[in-house]
Length: 239
Image (cartoon, rainbow, N blue to C red; front, side):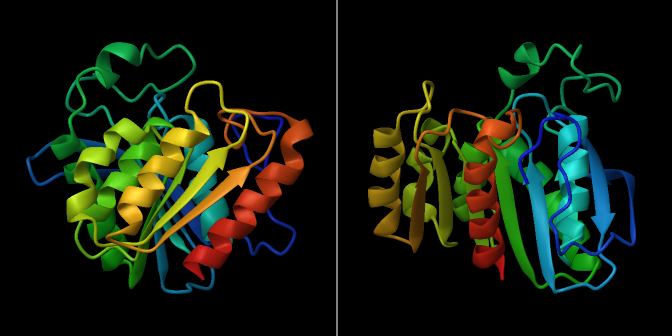
């Protein structure tokens, strides 16, 4: 599942081509336009995945990741963060995301996630998970408290600070995929969150030894083993 082309994760060996994929516009409960990308499976499994990107928003990588989830049988929707503050649909490498990240709020994120969840339920998904990366990883864990009815919340090298004040309200199990050589987000911080959240919900903490921050979504072939292990953990968790 790891990749050298940062815009297109490769298919798993046993993948079944997705039935369809394409851009989608959702509306959050507060009326905000939510830019999204939907991928539909050929043989639905009942699983639904809301993909929560890193700071880049709905970058092409996350559109393609939704497709890869559809190839496993999941209904998938990747959502954008920035409909409240950014004009247009450009989320290329030229997109200046920092001012928009600074204006994000937990309530806004939860509203965007809820729009994605509603779309997946409309498509027939009955077991719905969030999967996020870095910024999105922390917000994915937080959805255990902020988005009712989720089956589980998965985060890669998430920002612990985005979730730690929501622990008391958590209801959905967490899968925490942590980069063992992360220079930005210490493993000890993730371990502390796992301990506190574990008093409320089941928590699985998986440390990928030697893997750097963003190994799954921006890395190179030398981290193929860590990527494969993380992907297998996700498929097991949602299965």
